[in-house]
Length: 409
Figure 1 (cartoon, one colour):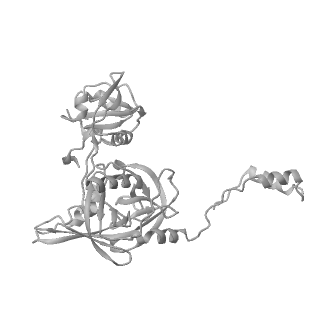
Figure 2 (cartoon, helix red, strand yellow):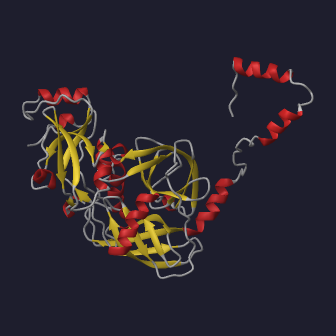
Figure 3 (cartoon, rainbow, N blue to C red):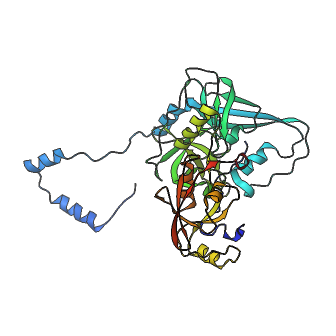
């Protein structure tokens, strides 16, 4: 049974677990401050020995970095490992050129309208992106949409050397791809982590935006854990890093760095309706997927087969009044299943429309993104315990995720 689109965008986002697509110093005044100033003026000229010992024993306050050129230092550290990727493929009679798909990939249905192209004879479509080196023997990381459908991939290093790259594998669900070139002693990008990443920290992007090689831009981390739906590419399974460091087409696949010159993400998307915002895949996600691609050439993602929305009072009331759904919900927090796809693990396990998901594998879930993360971290064919509220009663249901069907990738 389907669900009316009127629920979309109300208190949550409908999400089918698994899909994918795409080509190509301030001043501070206060009474306390004034009091402190007056107290300071009353201090004796000589500090008693006992107080002096205490002062000497106290640790010094933490100091901020004083390297005024840390951006250049970070760029010089990582820059040699950033590559340009030129992908091309032969196309016959296409009226949908690569740039049209790129715009749709970045902007969805709200992409700027490009003029219709006449039917063309066989020709070459070319696109440019970025990437960075993971190992000295030529393993590279980039976006899946940069190399999608390419017949040939040319990799150019910062020192000017060019190599023909072999696409080892690509995962459209996370937009991660890996390439191998035959080379040795290559500069390797140092990888960091996002465990302590927070808004306000420095962010540095390196890549080839608009065909301008080795461009460095800087800004801050604007937000973390942005869901793919918030970013506007709901078919991805990624919680993105948001930055205001300038990112443009051509930056895709390039690294996002912290102030220490460590890679914390891979730039992947921009938003036309929000100037100054770009998004990057956390390096932990990109590295995990790349390891699988280099090992097997493919990635399998767990799949349940449900559509769901974030539950709030408005969504609850709408569902309760909808005779088509025919369920009554008392909860006003959690994630409500609005459709169970036929022939899926969710249907086989007995999950039902109107079930409110509260916990997965003993972890509380409050949003669709929480559910998505728990499913993505589960194992294919292994029991995933889902706790739901159904008709006011708690039920625990074991579901065994299968691999995401190819047609949904």
